[in-house]
Image (cartoon, rainbow over all chains, first blue to last red; front, side, top):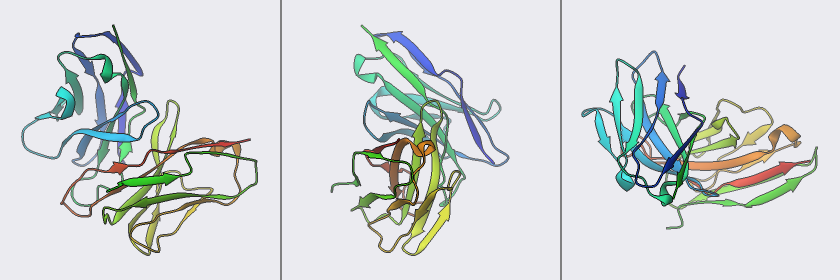
Length: 115
Length: 114
């Protein structure tokens, strides 16, 4: 079984400040890792994913994440946030290979960017 | 392409009533899933389908039925609604195999059971 822990339920930051949203996972096998973003009253949109290879992955809107196998972490970072980044962010894991239709999500982190 | 569409956007039911949440996609995705989102709980998988005629249970299937007669549609049925089913429901789809690992989500249906 797999599980995902997002360590912060809410993260308030000021505009143009850097931000890190933390994600740890637990799994007895290798996993694929994802970050999704949900803007208010919308569905989820993929930000980035880690399948294999380079541990630093870049996504849309200037976000990046680093996979750390020894710490079982996949933290999301952005060097300078904008008001428009205010949203809820979800970390998710799935089994590797083609059967990753079964995503396991964390409980989400609400990022609020203040002027 | 319209992507993944869900209807209705909002629904209020009384306890014991039944209804069907509709989900359709026009991307020819074989994999489709239903999730429910509750405050502080993230998204939890209800049912999923890997193709027409093939469905299986996810993490929280009790109280919900699904069927998949076409590639495009994947309706979710509540046979006897309960207040515990008050939630936001999301449908998602993706291509099979290793072509892409991105799941595409619909805009959601907000359901209230009184």
